[in-house]
Length: 81
Image (cartoon, rainbow, N blue to C red):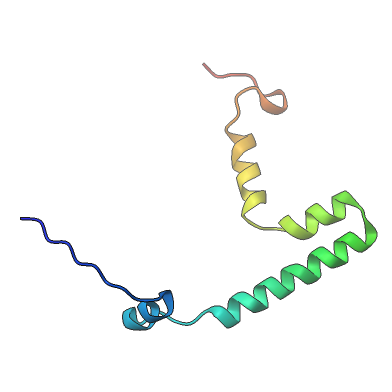
């Protein structure tokens, strides 16, 4: 047996119905902080400073460490196969 249910509601109505928190204010604060960092980095027009501001100590740094640790032959490490 197959049952299809269609619900016509806005994302706001769905969020309230499911009891999810309203994170619009938090999202706006985060975006404002990101805008400030980007603006600050672009003032100096130093590409290295811009990248550090955007990716500072976040998941990208951990991803790079994991990537290079798993690359055979990277950084002078011989392939173990």
